[in-house]
Image 1 (cartoon, rainbow, N blue to C red):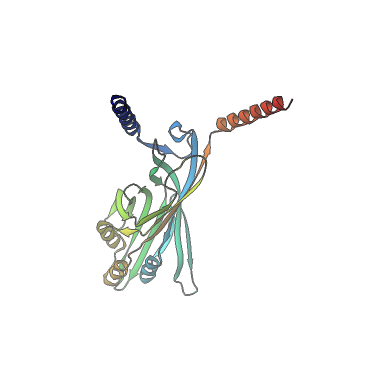
Image 2: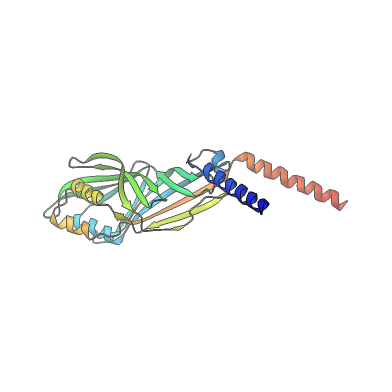
Length: 250
């Protein structure tokens, strides 16, 4: 019994030490990191506007354009109504759990600018840029830098959306391509108010925005690869295995 108790205490201490050693590590894109198993990564996050949001943009005749490092994709039908709108931005950094390699957060650079013209009962005119997203996967929140017209100005690390659900890869363990999808983006109360003020929305424009319960989907794709020396070691290992196999055959 004494031995068993000592074993249990030792095991508990080992687990506690492992938990204590875990830490949130930020890994920049394109940089080889020992905390990332000697790998480097590249990636992009794409925000696709929902049908509800596109309808609200149609109501206000709001235009959408890319901002900064992001690339916007916009298409309309023959009557000038939106078919789709999205913005793809490079991922600049990942925050990971140093032990489990679970992705806790991801940061991007660039975004999209929305410009509202003066339109009776809809808008008095204005603009809003949403850029540099910081997606908190652990708490299902999206923060951003917003640049708003009509006196809103620039607000960094602004709590903009809540995430409804997360599907796909939630950790990066080894080289490969990982895709994660965030759906059901719902705007915060403060975010809604900043949208209204920045775009100068009036009664009809505000009502259209209030009808948007889902702002869209964020899809991120990350490709992780080992550093060149890892490939070299793998090659030497394979060569060594080949030599051993030859000697055994002789």
